[in-house]
Image (tube, rainbow, N blue to C red):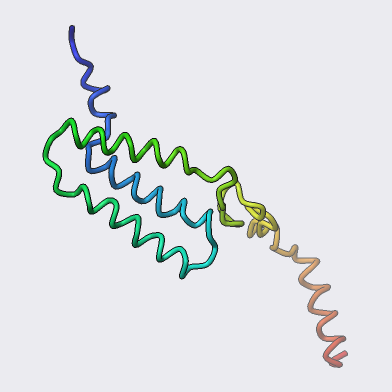
Length: 125
């Protein structure tokens, strides 16, 4: 059976998989606590858990540890994760989008009217 090289290239390396799991876990911790000091304590504990298995060399044991960690992440996933208000999916995403520059350009007639009004307001008239 021939192996599709494209399918192989789409698979993550072990390093990528562990790094993404760590980053995802760190970011997800913020959903459970908004206090940075409490978050920092949990982040240090999380890092210790990752460092405990840093020196493993057996591929099967490493795969088991990573799968267990991914399963634990799914188990502790927050039901309503925090999304920054201005991020996609946030409550203020694309709210009050500034108008395009061409919408702010005045016609020559409007510029003349604006100049007359400013002169009148400044008492030059």
